[in-house]
Length: 283
Ligand code: KIV
Image (cartoon, rainbow, N blue to C red):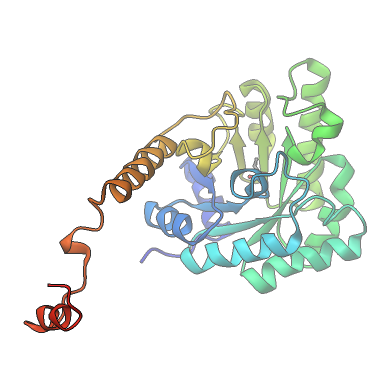
């Protein structure tokens, strides 16, 4: 059994120049596999709205749903640094609601931190959560909860002004007390500048190779979600293909009668099966 990953572990990795590994995780079986593989940070992302629940955005995801999934992952992965993703409108309505909702991740799912989307527009929330002893991971760049504002799932920071906005957002989040930052879908140069200027661990998803660590959506990298695949995804498996093959073989086996075979059947006591069949006229 490994040892518990804490914010101190993540800071040590940064200090030693060791890369931090992070994946999303949504349920018990994936949590077990990620813990076994030694993933440092598991994000129970509201992307589960799309990858697991089949919505076309993350906006419909409810707080209660996030708690159920975070609890399942924590049961599977006691050592990972577990981050609960604050769903849409769980932290924007009021500071009180933000603290109450973020607190649920800590109290009910034993999360180590919460993540929320936004830059200078959310520093008040980050400050309030930090004051309430709830560690926050900031998330800037492509922020999927703002697709209606961004005009879709679009990479960010691709001109000088947009890049400098991200650099300033990152600084503001750190100054507000964020314990870590997540950069999504931006050029590597922007990721490099933010990382070099940061005094906290910086993880990238589609932000190039210079961040302290890397995140991928686990269903993307396993080939288990293919409604669309962002440019930054590397596929390590094709689960959809494997599953489709297994399911169609099962359907064919049941139809042909080759499943179940005798090895899948329970045996009666010696001689009893014959006696039973004889009694019912089915020899
Ligand atoms: O919900 C999620 O998985 C995320 C990632 C896209 C960063 O926020």
